[in-house]
Image 1 (cartoon, rainbow, N blue to C red):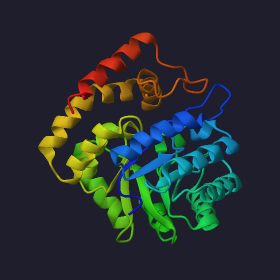
Image 2 (image 1 turned 90 degrees about the vertical axis):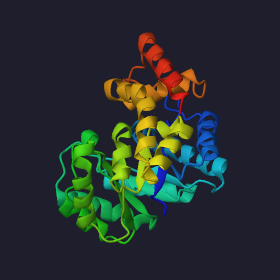
Image 3 (image 1 turned 120 degrees about the horizontal axis):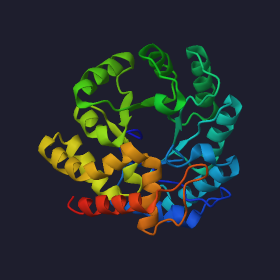
Image 4 (image 1 turned 90 degrees about the horizontal axis):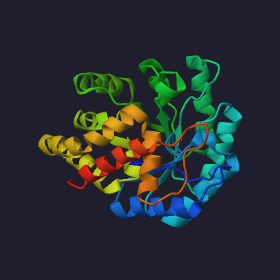
Length: 296
């Protein structure tokens, strides 16, 4: 059941030199743990995994393991350009106390299906920790086809896929197509916060959530309503989230959640350069969106 329910993906607070502030990270993790999220996604895209050194990633995982003491399972992103680096990150994650892995086919040179299959096979074999496929074509420029997903799902330790959610009109058919490519019990979950509620209503078993990493309580209410099939409640809560979803789509969720962390005094840090923080006018829009969410 590791890759089921609400998985909250926090930022990884770090200074301009890329040094992780474990105190600020622990404060974020405690909020998620107290809210009752089903898992924590550490060092995902929101967690700046491509902007941190191997040593700082290990530091973040160790801090999470110490802070949570096993109460909420931790899924760690281990994407890297080279297979040997991804293997090393997976081994670090296991040694530092992770319960699961998340792997995206990160590339600079475009990859083929066989290359991605071999990459995932090597990382999966390195630790035997359960692994979730991170299908993120918007960032990696590689889309995992149903045929490749079927091959990957046959690897014993690969247990789940994190797909990008689609608009409501398309998600039910896409979800059924994914289910037809994988064995029974394989966990099909979704990311893309503003679209995920419909993906859960269509049968998705996990929401890999950016917003839950910074606002776990309202995110959990939305997830539980979707899991219960309560469409009216989903629509009510989603309407309150819409000002924030607008900012996510326009300004990126990455920049926006860093601004939220600043506004809530949970992290004093900006995103790593060359990513620029939001301007004051956009921060005011973020603050207004948070005030709307008080109604959840």
